[in-house]
Length: 133
Image (cartoon, rainbow, N blue to C red; front, side):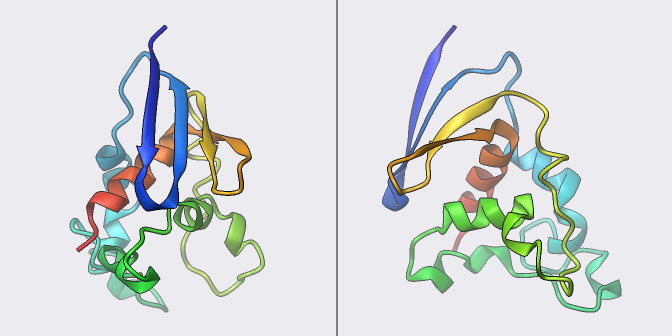
């Protein structure tokens, strides 16, 4: 097995994982689960956005709205649905179950505790970080 170590910039998160047999594509996950509402470039202008009661977030400004730092742990929590369980007004689906296929990787969420996290969730968050302006 190959061991991979990836540092997550200013958040200081650390990912240590055994490489999965097939490469996980954050872009492909985004196209499958997010682009219909958030649009191809993440601006909240996808074809399904017009039919929603609330406009989807512009995902290209997540870091800008967080003092220039990509809020990785918060983003993963929103995607998973964990932070929105009590938000009955949200139209965004909880993707936690959909992203659980594949191995778990350990992510330091900034509190010194390494948390097992689905590799697909991490890959999607990595892709969203690349969309930042």
